[in-house]
Amino acid sequence: MKQWLLVFLGGGIGSVLRHLIARHFNTYFSHFFLGTFIVNVLGSLLIGLILGFSVKGQYLSENQTLLLAAGFCGGFTTFSTFAFEKHALLTAGELFHFSFYLIASIVVGIAAVAGGLWLAKLF
Image 1 (cartoon, rainbow, N blue to C red):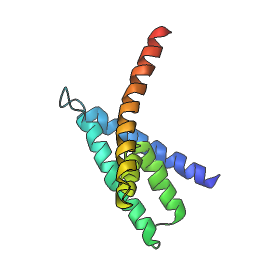
Image 2: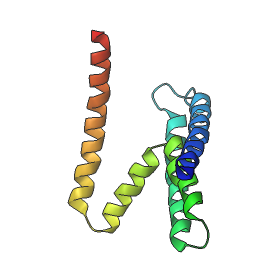
Image 3: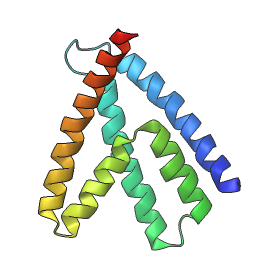
């Protein structure tokens, strides 16, 4: 139960921060979501640092890793987890699985958004 609360707390903080950054920076350009881009890159850097420190073992406890990686980075951007997973596939030499998952995630994700918008029009 404590671990769920840590993820919940970190996720809430990350989500609010993502909203504030996107709200501020997405107004700069009409065809480039600068705030979202900043959040995705920053979230990817943060999850790399957090999980890197966690692997070293003496820097972050399991609860701190849950709060920061699953909670904060998960709420801040799911792109950070997506990027970490792609990196893991690349470093494992799984080029086919990396390419397939990357392309499928983007194509199916965009199709799912289009499908959701289409379904919403029906109701």
